[in-house]
Image (cartoon, rainbow over the protein chains, first blue to last red):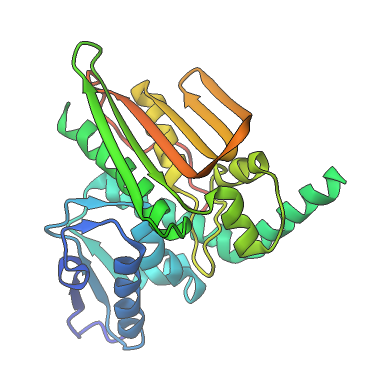
Length: 121
Length: 158
């Protein structure tokens, strides 16, 4: 990565079109922008200024899905999350943690349900 | 209601609406209502959809037949999700954490399954008749002035 280049700054309110980050659709729009920016050699600043509410459903779509493509250290090395409360930053950590478990074995939900059905027979 | 409590409550409601939109496939959308009980310092909020319920979502996504109670237990387990190609399963867990700290209450009815959760109670029951969709009622203690932080539950990948 060329550290001399300025980071790509993305304002969440501009992408989501709202100060409420409460839908998967808006999260997916942020994810698409992040993925495109990650294909450059620049770092990224994801700016949450002006955002009043963030929920996990939005963050799963926006940031959790990145774990399919990058490790958490890679994500944190490329993307800086700014103007977030300490609690919302902690929520991002939880979303990333949960995403790692999800992508380790995406089919585990079907398997666990199938096993329960087998046990019930 | 303190600003922090209000924020937590709004997050919980946001998670419930997101769930209704993402999972229910309700053709009639979702319905919500609320009532404040000033003497008891309690606020009740209810959201209901006329969709497939937890059971229907599992049958649709995984093509597996499970009974209503198993479906509800699955959907209330942290990290479990019926979303395809996207992680999920945190919203209800976060809401339960908040309700336990707030000393509030959650009641969920989905198809034939009934679930009630509070600080001292977690109860699943099979109803005689099925509700055609999912209905979630949350009751919060508005006199609560705790300083909320996400639970101290450790991260697996800190």
